[in-house]
Length: 341
Ligand SMILES: NC(=O)C1=CN([C@@H]2O[C@H](COP(=O)(O)OP(=O)(O)OC[C@H]3O[C@@H](n4cnc5c(N)ncnc54)[C@H](O)[C@@H]3O)[C@@H](O)[C@H]2O)C=CC1
Ligand SMILES: O=C(CO)COP(=O)(O)O
Image (tube, protein in one colour):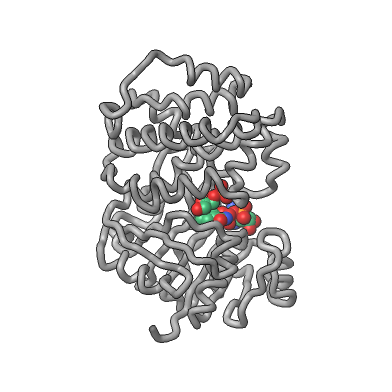
């Protein structure tokens, strides 16, 4: 592919890793960060010490604190900011967004105040028609491994097939394999909801439970992700793919996962605030638990793991009691529940 210009918005671990990848593909990359000092440190040191130490940015990456400069001439704009900042950054970006540019969103979360998926947030800010150039990027992809060129497979989805295919070609490289999926709703929800289960798995490990408990949480967690997903219009098969089971596996088991780590700290007895401070990076699952809990109540979807995780995070329930509650639920069938609400 000919050399393209890309703007990556967000100088955390994911933004830095994606800027690295795109520059390795030979593109000219502008990495937007909020603070001038951070931009100049990235430009001189070539390393993001706070969020992705040990990774050196290729020459093709220039950091800037100016959105206007970052977006000038960009063929693609990649959002890599936490989901709670997404609406605000979209709003600031719109005046400078080149008309034909594709928007690729790597954030994995839901908006707490509105309970919207991030593509819906984008549509409310940019207009419904802008969704034709909007693509979500999801799947098992820890920044620490992507930026070290470790083999990774991800998925992109858009309501317009051509946009997903464009993003696939744009992102794909020998260490980053990109699949397409037409199910925007399912790919967004899979990426967001798996973080709740990763928190739960971390809690479980922090308590000292073993691999059986972890496997049970992941499997039954996938069931409730699919239940809510189907109720919200997703294709259940998406949850058997990279944005579903794939990302669930990596987030529940990887030493890189911030959601799993935060859960582990809570399982060891830390408060939510202490756990978040110990992680020091965004833990999307905390806010997503709030949204999924509210949606489950409102829509009457059975999500017992989400409910217990919510109570541990926000109502001071002891993790051990939460585990007992899950184990002590009325006996039920396995298969008939899958994909149901
Ligand atoms: N780190 C990873 O391996 C992956 C992360 N993601 C997703 O990417 C999104 C970003 O996560 P990370 O980069 O990992 O987070 P991070 O915690 O490493 O960094 C967050 C970055 O966002 C910036 N930020 C915070 N509030 C902001 C605001 N209001 N406006 C602009 N920038 C703001 C922070 O200064 C920081 O640079 C999340 O939704 C996460 O789930 C997705 C795939 C992989
Ligand atoms: O989504 C991710 C990997 O695919 C990152 O997960 P964490 O935010 O838990 O680190």
